[in-house]
Image (cartoon, rainbow, N blue to C red; front, side):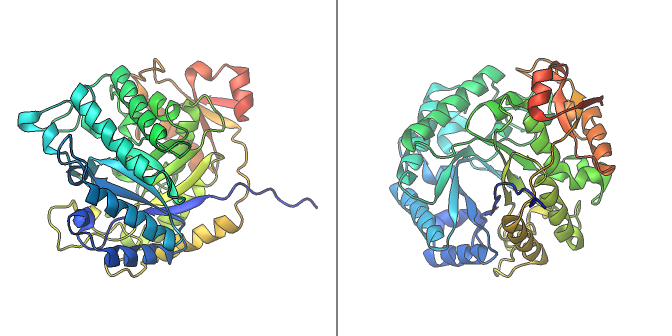
Length: 417
């Protein structure tokens, strides 16, 4: 009997949320607390963390990138290495858990468009080069992500957006990714967007940018986007949402082997009740692992947010795998078990023979991409198939009659939304 084929091992990690002071910890950096946090993450058997530099703390003036802040970041990366953890670094924070962190030299009396102003672009490029260059020789450095969902500054529903068109957004991404690559060649330098890039008509950051720039695609899966509200915490669309985004990325790319990193996924209450969080995690990860091109899963987030801190949306406080006292929660223990099992033996994903056709309009700007959003015809058709046990792909309408494209992806049946 032939042994079953296994797929490449997946990476499993957490988005690091410090237990003392949240991301404000950069203002009072405590090496002992950071090490204790990292040891507790490593104790779950995870292999990497994604960490976030608060931009105004690191670059408070366009001409000042604080050496002490950079040194603290390097300390964190070295401490992670001691714990057996690799590190990906996000620079432009930018936006975190409903709060915006922008340096004073970009706002009010010094208002500059983050994407189109030449001085702003020069300052951002210097900042990215500095961080990437400082990290370049660290063996556990995975690479830079430009910033956390930085596209949210570019349009609605942000209350004070810095407008840019798709051409300008693409040029900005290319320039900033090049700065990272020049400073730290060969690392996994990426950009991340929230799901407006995939779902919102008219959003300037497009699916084409997501799958065409950088060596891999990132997706952030949050079911509070209308999915859980429409389908409930145990609905097929909810439990397969992360898988859907990975497959949507596969439908957009020109490279059938392009890796996709599930860079954020979490179990937000009350959309996912606390008593369902572990089951949600197990189903979400198992479903995403059925995708051929999945690189890894990075859970949001490592630790709960201390409730002594004010003004967070309620759902942000309890997303952690561990408590603020660094004790594993049932969710954390379940993810640890899933990671161990999938590292030991991950079945090779079966080809997805059936694909749902969708038409986003012009592929360069995707003016009708909302057909793929929760409630849209492509999303709902794919979710119905998932509920019936069909592992479906998606295919753009302009490729649905291309035999070579379908053959390369193993698709033998195309169905309409």
